[in-house]
Length: 177
Image (tube, rainbow, N blue to C red; front, side, top):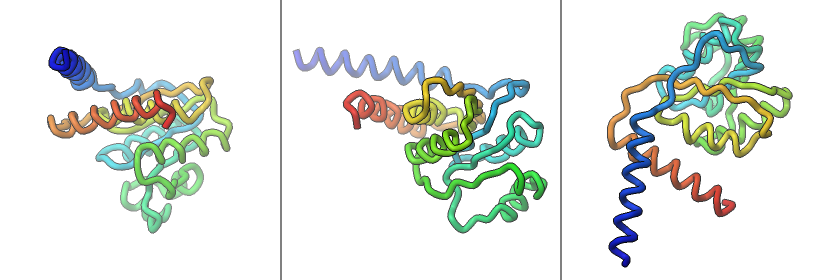
């Protein structure tokens, strides 16, 4: 009986992992405008994508969540070759978060303070499912989230690790943690 239960659980995990790995989220269409853009730091191309979308006027403001406390706006503009006036007027640096869950918490506060009804979430393709889950859990059901995944080429180990983190977050959510 235990062997059957463990086998069934393993088969479910494999089927879920295959779905997760084969259907990674994709970049959103550029023509979609939202009130704000949230970039969760931690991977290549994320900040660049957010700044490009802001520069193309796809939103009014951009939050870059999880920025090191020592980073200043002018340093960010220089590092990413963004116009200083764009960064000064329309980019908020979030210094409070250290992981995906606290990124979502920081973003949820920013969204509520600005009374945004729609945001574009920018993060890596392999990270999007968990990031969106955490953000949805901390924001209003009325918030429209446009998932805008930055394409990457994750390895098997990275995908397994992220899938397991996502499953643990879902389980924690189900039991109220």
